[in-house]
Length: 141
Image (cartoon, rainbow, N blue to C red):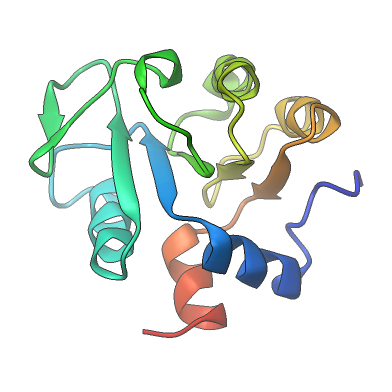
């Protein structure tokens, strides 16, 4: 495991979540019943700036939605990925290119090569964990 992979380090995940301000959610759905939408709303309620990234939408949750990470005009602390594992490598390449601080792969999104590439490029990496669940577990409501 690469030292930048903090998936099994609760203290490091807590610090990451406490320090982060901006979370780009790749694959954020406009449908309220989708996990990505539920997670985004919860994270927004606790104070994070949410940046929707999904080429299928112009707007999600009343926020401008970007087609990819390259189009986002501000620094991204965490790239939270709700995509199939086969699509993660392209997201990693974008996250590296824009200088994101962390690649976070949601529950069930397991892409070892992509995670390794992100870690080797200097991004913190969290794999197969939910940002909402980890926030509630490590920081609270």
